[in-house]
Length: 106
Image 1: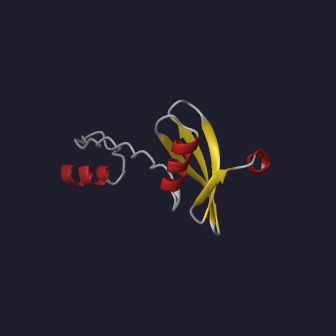
Image 2: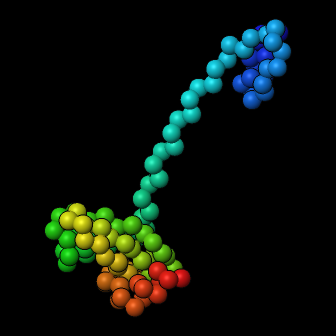
Image 3: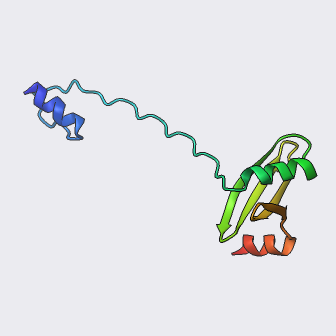
C-alpha cells in the first residue's frame, strides 16, 4: 500500500488516509536557464559598427525587430551609452530619432 501511495504522490495525488504515511518528497524544481539574448543575422555587424563609431569598449546588440531585409537593434555600450541601429542587408546605420520615437509609441 505504501508503494502505491508514494507512486501516486509522485504524480501529484494527495494522500487523505491518516493511517498511511507518504515518504515521497518532491525534488526542488531547477531554475529555468536565463533567456539567451536575442541575436540576428547582423548582430556581429551591429556590434562592430557601434564599437568603431560610438562605444569606448565592448558593445552588446540585442535584436528588437526584424523584417524583410532589415533588422533593428538596441545597442548598449560598456560606458552606459545606448543607441538604436537599423541594419539592411549587412549595412548598419543609426536609426533616425523620428523612426525610433514612432516605433516606441506603437
